[in-house]
Length: 117
Length: 399
Image (cartoon, rainbow over all chains, first blue to last red; front, side):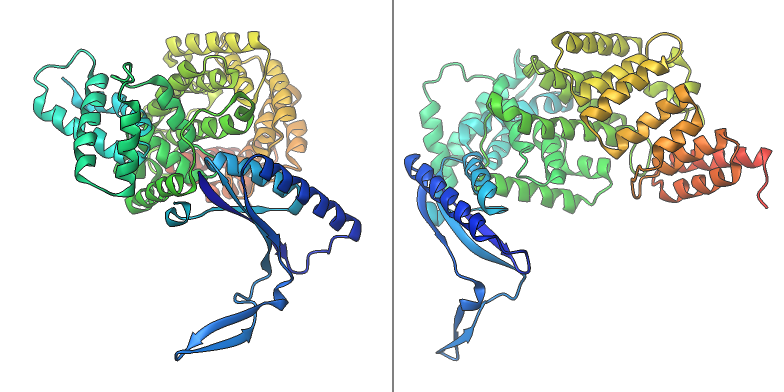
């Protein structure tokens, strides 16, 4: 079994979905989660608040300092993600297709060997 | 005994089987290379089945090597080998393994450039410098593409298996594209010599293997037929001075009759299945071109109409316009090209130039030839375009 991160991306300035669209998205996401759990592929999933609520912590000269986030100033941010486990990339891609139909483009990224053990 | 040709023929098959046995492409390649080195020292005469000899030797060498190592890959490979130990048939290369490896190399999760390089290296058994020469790319670039692709296959867990029937519509086209582009690069090289016969031969060899492995896929047969019917005309494509000869002006007696017969036979087999696809239609078009003493243009146009409906790309629209010109005249063809946009592709202005010249609009034709010449990357094609433009000025001189 391998683990994959399926991340959902939010593009700044893109038109916000209507309430109704959001409701559909939540409902469909729940359905995918149920399906993942039934297939034994579910590890974790969650949605994130907007990047302006992020805080960056770093150690400078041995002392922790905090600053208003996000860490990377880009127009695209992670809006949520799944961690799934399955046999190979093809299976991960099949799950990603279902997620993409609900949440837009999905980046599929494998965890490294140490995390799979 | 010609070890080089055995290497070329058996390398891909042996790597494919060892990849299944060891679960890792790099280990498989090392083991097969080890086995060929041993063969070089030990073979006095050719063994009855060289492929089986290589697979068995590679497998034994791999076992020795893995016992000495203790990396994660080595442990994994040892476990796999143990698992396969009492599998009695595995003495030689297994056909399905090669099909598995082709689908791994052409997986849509890999970058298109990487798919071609990896297929040539692993399936075709070409060395990195050979691939670099064929594509006029630095050796380091090709080497890096291959290393990166193999790393992604391992890290991302790209599977080593033949896709299920329902996955084939997504997974077969990238495989066919790799073989088609490989042939095209050989047939109309982007730079250097116009024709790289080795690359054409390699693409045809792989298409033949794929057709033998998937005889029920009409698009696979269609691709093979297309390559054979195009290859058949190669001897007539350049004049003795190395200049380009257009289809209509080619000496048909130079065409390869055996390849044409084989191509026509494949097209007929496809037609019977009645599951048309872009490669089958292109093969049918080439079958018409190679049938009888001259091309039946209305039939070619009908096929292009069908192709355009199935694959509405600008390149198809451009090729269709050539058939339109033959059936309905250059003015109609020119109008058909009005909305076609192919930035940077010399064949669009070159075709416009031909049509304008036929309409007697020499000034516009000359401008289009200049545009095409500026875009053409191949010396032979540039020389051809310049000659066509010069023919214009013999009857018309620019002011």
